[in-house]
Length: 377
Image (cartoon, rainbow, N blue to C red):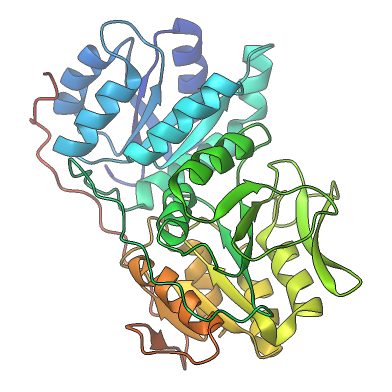
């Protein structure tokens, strides 16, 4: 960052969107738009000239598509990128692909009343830019291989996993779920994501995983070998019908500014499944889930928090660790194996380390890539 201001480059083929983003960003004293670009080829030259801290990027643009540009950018010069996405089925699919390629997060682009809609998002846009400037973007390696399958173990039918995530969570959740065997315990997931995106997210994961992944439906039974993702406009809680756990959904007010809220999910599990629960808190901005993870640990549940090194944004895990809510801090690549071990009748060793004190202060390393890399084919 230059001085105390976050330097932002906005890339969009719409002059209106470029103007609105500039007005919104420049209205906040800690950030500024250093340049705007109508397409990725112009953006490439502006990145070299201005070396911005954060890039906002539209998907549909002339001369080079946003996804093609993003893939090259994250391979050659990783930097924090926020996508602008429309709230459509096609838009959600493209957005998920962008997150897979290394984009940090996305900003919803209104389809009607664009000017008023964008200004309604002003505080959220600013918050996401601040988060992006502190994040640690990852270099995307070509031909990334899927994680190997974990062996099916004698998983206890009483065990249940509740998992929460926010920024960076779509890929982190994929990395946790993909290696799990078909007899993994039932998993309830709260990922901060607006309505309309979670169904596409669940469908994408269902095609990649051995377990069944679906958007949660009110009243359905929680089954082993299934993961249930909270719809993007509802809180998900754990309920009981007779001897069975069931999914419950409600449209109550946001908690920690989120619906679904991780705290809401975790606290419901603390009330019902108690020490039969394994709580997992992954990468994300803010503190949602920290209180809920503590409530779980206080009932005797096993609680895992993702470590700083592998978290795209260490906010939520850091808050939980500082509260003493995490019984273990685990690298992302070890979470699947660890939760599976905890769900078996006899647990095994792990590379996780137990937490006995407050978390260390995080260090936010800005990428120092060469601003003169060329992103053209």
